[in-house]
Amino acid sequence: METKQELMDRIVKKGFGENAEAIMPIIARNEIAVVVFELDPANWSAARDFGWDGKSPVFKMSKSVIKNFARGIRANFPDDKATPRWLENGRFGRIFLLIHHGTLLVNFDPESGYSLEPGSDDPNWMN
Image 1 (cartoon, rainbow, N blue to C red):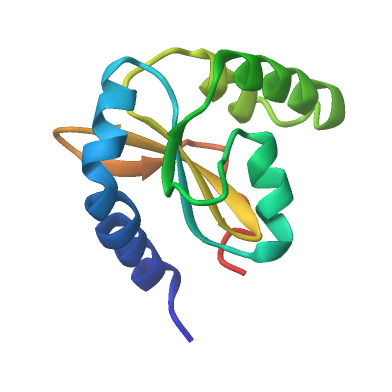
Image 2 (image 1 turned 180 degrees about the horizontal axis):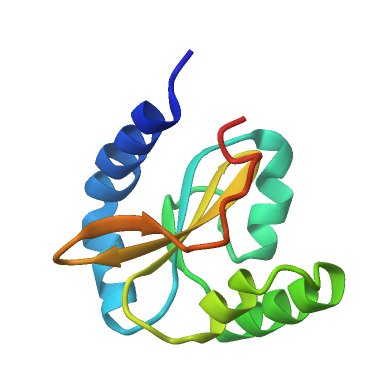
């Protein structure tokens, strides 16, 4: 079985590295890049709700999706302060990862690389 670190290394290499040309222009505009990586087919419908066309590994999360998603998180998961803050902060380097059965909020910094948004680790993402 793959360890969490091995999976993260593979995500960075294949999910982000191989799609850098599509990701970088999105995050350079302080928008959210959505990366679809090894998504379970059972979650394809949910991914389409975020704007996925069913094919592209990378796309931009629209402003209306950001607004509705943040509103939904606040209403349904009031203890989750990290997700709405991350969605709405407008900073450079945000990547929303749709993976397996879960999601991850990833930050990219040119100097330090990739990191998970503090307080956002979804326990289902590795499943």
